[in-house]
Length: 107
Image (cartoon, rainbow, N blue to C red; front, side, top):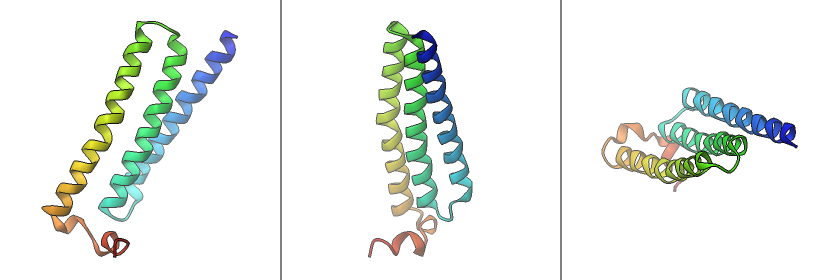
C-alpha cells in the first residue's frame, strides 16, 4: 500500500510541475498582457494544488500535513487576489498594457 501512495504522490508532483512549466511558457508565448496573466494565474494555481497534494500524501497525517494545507490555503487566497489587483491597476492606470485584442471580447 505504501508503494502505491508513493507512486501516486510522485505522479501528482510530476503533474503539478508540468502544469507550472506550461504556465511559464504561457507567460512567454501569449500575445497580450491579459492573456499572459490569465495563463500564469490559472495554471500555476492548479500546479500548486497538485504539487502540495502530492506532498500531503507523501507526508501522511503529521504536523507537516497541517502546515502544507495552510500553505495551500494561503496560495489559493493570495494568488487570485494579487492577479486581480495587478490587472485592475493595469486596466485603470497604464492603458498601454491593455490592447484592442483584450477589449474586443468585452463589447
